[in-house]
Every structure is written in C-alpha cells, then in structure tokens.
Amino acid sequence: MAVIYERVALIGLGLIASSMAHAMKAKGLAGEVVGYAKSAESRAVALEIGFCDRVEETAAKAVVGADLVVLAVPVGAMGAIAEEIGPHLAPGATVTDVGSVKQAVIAAVAPHIPEGVHFIAGHPIAGTEHSGPRSGFATLFQNRWWLLTPQGADAAAVARLRALCEGMGAKVDEMDAAHHDLVLAVTSHTPHLIAYTMVGVADDLRRVTDSEVINYSAAGFRDFTRIAASDPTMWRDVFLTNKEATLDILGRFTEELFALQRAIRLGDGDHLHAYFTRTRAIRRGIIEAGQDTAAPDFGRAAQVAPKGG
Ligand code: NAP
Image (cartoon, rainbow, N blue to C red; front, side, top):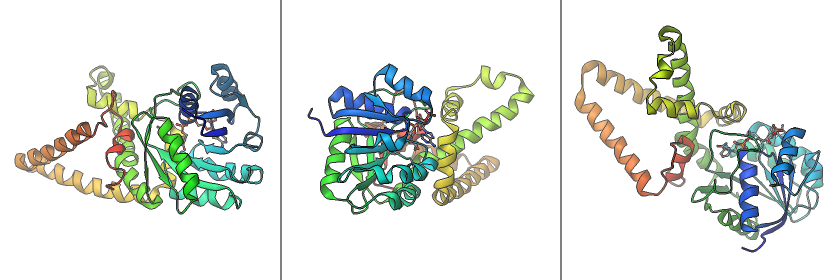
C-alpha cells in the first residue's frame, strides 16, 4: 500500500497506539512513526520493539513536522496534551484521537487546535484488556469499526484519515459525537461497569466461601473477570466523561433487572423464557454480522450497532 502520511506522531504508546504503529508499518502506510509516552520506560520499549522510528521526551517535540498526530492517552489527559502541542502543530496537519468518549474529548481538545490544522475525533472499536507498549499487535483493527466524528472537518482531510483506518484493516463509519457516546454507553461502557460490579460482588463472597468463586468459576464469570481487568485509569476516565449517557443506560438496566428479579420471585417462567429468547437472537445477529471474536469482549460487541444506537 502507498504511504498515506509522511510522518505520524503517536502521543501515548499503549495498546491502541502501538497496534496502530504495527499496522501502519506492516502495510507501509506511514513514512516515519514518531512516539511520545509519559514514561521513559514506555518510550524505550517502543524503540526496543521497533514500532517507533524515533521517540521524543515531550509531546511538543514529537509533533513537530508531523502530518498526522494521534492522541492515544486516557481521555482525561487529552486536553492538557492538546494545550501543550497546539503551538507546535504543522499547518495543514491532521490531529485525531482514539478516545472511547467523544463529546468530552472534542470539548477538551478543539479549543487548542490552531486555525489551518484539521481536528477529526475518532474511536477504534477494538481492544483487549491488556495495556502498555508491549500489548499492541498489527491485526487489532482487522474487520473492526473505526468511528469518526468529524463535526464539519475538511472533507479531503477526513477522506485521508479514513484511508489510513481502512489501510489498517478497519471499517470506517462517521457519526455525531453525542450519538457515539450513547451507543458506546450501551454496548461498552455500561457492560464494563456491570462486569466490574459482578467481580466486586464475587470478591466479597470469596471471603465467605474461601476460594470456591475462583476454583469453580464458570465461563461467564471468567469473562467478567477478564473485562474487569481492563486498565483502571482508562475506565475511570470513561465514566467520568461519559457520565450522562452511562447513567441513563444504567437506569434502564436497573429497571430491566428489577423486572427479571420480579419474574424469578413470582416463578414467571414465561417471562424469563421470552426474555432469554430475545437476547439469544441478538447474539445470533452479532455472529451473522461477522462481529464475533475469539474471546468475548463487551467493547467489541459495540461493532454491531455503530449506527443503530
Ligand atoms: P494504554 O495501553 O494504557 O496506554 C496509554 C498510554 O498513554 C501510555 O503510553 C501512557 O504512558 C500514556 N499516558 C497516560 N497518561 C498520560 C499523560 N498524562 N501524558 C502523556 N501520556 C500519557 O491505553 P490504551 O488502551 O492504548 O488507550 C488509549 C486511548 O484509547 C484511551 O483514550 C482509551 O479510551 C482509548 N481506547 C482504548 C481501547 C481499549 O480497549 N484499550 C479501545 C478503544 C479506545 P506510559 O506508558 O508512560 O504510562
């Protein structure tokens, strides 16, 4: 494939950024990949693995001369990074981000993007519970959705970024930032919260039943523990910044849970059976859409509904 950006600056060198670097290198999509992460250790790992050609000690230095800058830090850190790099961005460059929440990132980043630089927020719906520069791999985005929320950005700049995402194997869709945040609250954010809660409940129980919870944990609970192992900083920021939509969906979830609780108490098997039949059909729909994954991942399940909301 042809080079799409001559110099890509990755700000943050964790799972998403390192996977992007691996994918861009595998497909020849970037002339040079420059990296910056908060810790010297992560910067050294990026060089050791070789997914960055060069690393810099500040974000401001890393973006100099880059025609694409990718903000791949936790959502809560985006605004401060944007403020730091703003004066150093090259005219005509594109800035994008990969944050899991869009409205809050746009509000924090956009004010720092100078005139003549394109800001196109985005979110690859792909991930694992692992983090850090050693966790990335080139095929992470293969057949996954990459959602862009361009909000009126220059069409040629959007087309170029879209080509990069597609070059890394993703399918691209565009949507409004508020719609994105609601869809992701349903398909990723609230399910993560439920997983965190379930594992917390089991941990409390473990004190009563010794190690039975772990020893006899069935596949369902093991999946919860895997999801609940996701990075605490990233997920703290997701809930703090997608507060409204998450609380809305959590409210609806609680109502449904009460209805199921009532059906169990009343012995209403018809209600339970009808409910489980409906949810089973949703699972089949995911498989038919080719969006099943080797290991279950609530975040990835978002890919069935980027438009539906
Ligand atoms: P990660 O593996 O934890 O990596 C985060 C990177 O950001 C690390 O390199 C870290 O530096 C750096 N960083 C953290 N705070 C910083 C700060 N204040 N200034 C500069 N650098 C900082 O995270 P990730 O999973 O790649 O997630 C990155 C972004 O992608 C997040 O916004 C997340 O919402 C989004 N996202 C994640 C997933 C997923 O499943 N993981 C999926 C889609 C989107 P050090 O290495 O030095 O600590």
